[in-house]
Every structure is written in C-alpha cells, then in structure tokens.
Image 1 (cartoon, rainbow, N blue to C red):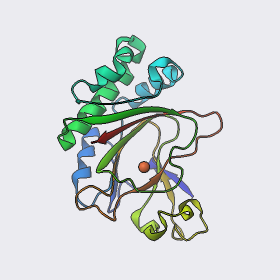
Image 2 (image 1 turned 135 degrees about the vertical axis):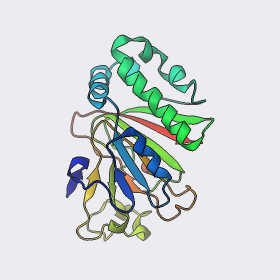
Image 3 (image 1 turned 30 degrees about the vertical axis):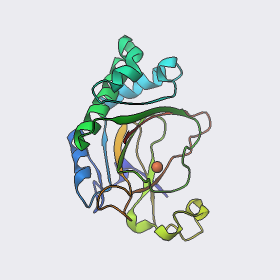
Length: 217
Ligand SMILES: [Fe+2]
C-alpha cells in the first residue's frame, strides 16, 4: 500500500509534511525525524530540471565546500544559462537553508541522475540530518516509526514484506516530485534508535530521477 504526501494527513507525532519552506526548521524539534515541504516555485523548478535532465548541466557531480560558494562552484554553468536559472536558484536556496539551519561552514553536496534505486532496502542513515530533494522522478519512500521492527533493519529482510519487518497494516509513504525533505539520522543528538526509516524508490522503466543530497560533515 502506497500513499503520496497529498493523501497523508498533515503530520503525526514524528513527521511533518508542511506547505511552507520555513517549516523545514521543525526538524530541530526533538520528536520530529522527517520534515518535507514543496520547493518554492516547484512547478517551474521541476519543468526546468525536466528540460535540462539529459544535458551536461545536470550531470552527476559531488563536491564539498563553503555554503557561500558551493552553488557557484558546482553549478555555475547552470546559473549562467537563462533556462537553468530556476533550478540554480533552487539549489542555492537549499544549500543556504541547510547550512543556516545547522550553522554549517561546510556542506557536502551530490547531484545524481538515477535510473535505479540507490538504496533500495529500508534503512536509517548514520548521519545527523540529510537533505534530499527530488527535482525529477519519484520521491523517497519512508515508513512511520511504529510501522517497523528495527531489529530487522540491518538484515536482508527489510525489503521482504513477509519478513515481519513491517508491521501489518503499515503503509509505505512517498514524497512527491518537487519536495525537499530533511531526514534525521541516528547521529543527531538524542535521535539514536529513532532515525527515519526510508529507502530509494525504484524508478519506473525509462524513468530518470534527478536528486540533490546535502550532508553535514
Ligand atoms: Fe538513506
């Protein structure tokens, strides 16, 4: 059973699907391990990304840098092309928001064009907080804390629906395209044993995803 964000209630005890970008700051709430909101001007950003998806401007890349210069260093060419401006501005905004939220002097960024699942099994990340934004294609999937038996997370059973890993009636949730999400991992202070359980979606045949991941280092 799969739900998209539009079909979900607005929040429950540990996650929040917001409407406004500013709501990303709710990730600092000790009880919250996932916040997602639509990108500002999401339709325009998605259209830009879709149009440029197969160009070199959206090729795979990763870099580490200071938040003030990282967007320019990684995506300067994209920013110089008029048709790339909305996507460039979205990326610059995301780097700025992520670094401001956690007072970061250094951010790790990865842009990936994917036609297969990066991490197809449900897992938790051993990070503080990771920001994942899907510009094209299916969004990341997650399940609620109470829907899983975490003892089976590290085993191959976590992608087997008959293993008992997912409790009966648990729905797999999925973020829509054009959403930015903050996934709180196991290393965030006070969040040990409560990292959000998630996985990469399997793209449909022929589907390509364009995903930006930001990490604190
Ligand atoms: Fe992950």
